[in-house]
Amino acid sequence: MKTYFTTLVLTISLFISLTAKSQPRLKATVPAKSIIKNMSTLMDYNRDHLRLNIDFIAYDAQAHIVTKTQFLKAITTGDYLPLKVSSGKKAWEYQLYKLDADADSDVKSMLKQIGVTYYGFNLMVGKPFPKFHYIDLNGNVYTPENTKGKILVLKGWFISCVPCVAEMPELNKLTEQYKNRKDILFVSMATDTKKALQGFMKRMTFKYAVVPVKAAYIENTLHTTGYPVHWIINKQGIVVSMTYDHAEMIAALHQEALKK
Image (cartoon, rainbow, N blue to C red):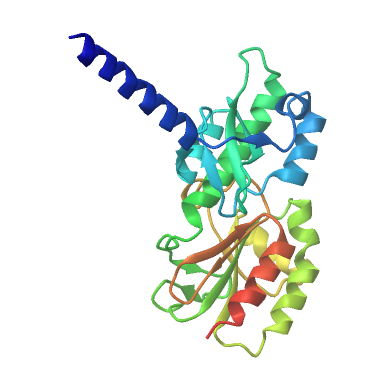
């Protein structure tokens, strides 16, 4: 009996030792406490260190590897900071850092917003774009069937959105750059009424096709959290880019346009 007990203890000890060795030693790039000090420090961290729309190794609060989807969903609660860490691997790594119950409510709200935004990217990018049937202001129809084999460049916006309108001259230059590419379509979805959009187009030059849609469609079906928003759908109907930055969209389009 004594021999059995000794063997059991040694086995358990060996298991604990191997488990401990299998878990990576994670070192925070920036101390968590300094990140969540206030909104300003969190915004700086978001700008300089968060790249959650790329491939990365995700760890839970106990340093166990989890899926990217599980990781991002946890952040949507506002209870976790996506802490940039390093284990010595040549890859981006992030770990869930649990906030204290008395953490700043504004910081938690912003973390929730960050989580919802990146979780939305995760639900869209790399997946088929949802079925659609768009009719633009000129009566042209766009469906998965008649856009198959073409790159579809989409924008979500509304008339009173200042940054949405401010980027239009740059987007007009982009359409000119690709005007001879019959395999690239530029379509925008606006949440205003058809009548309002027709009036706007008399005052403003915008060379995308303009489609009136409901805000709920853009925000719920397409998982967006802000405007303007851009998508690039490849010739197979797969979302290859979703971003709130038109410069990122333009770079992604240039890359996609080079493919055969």
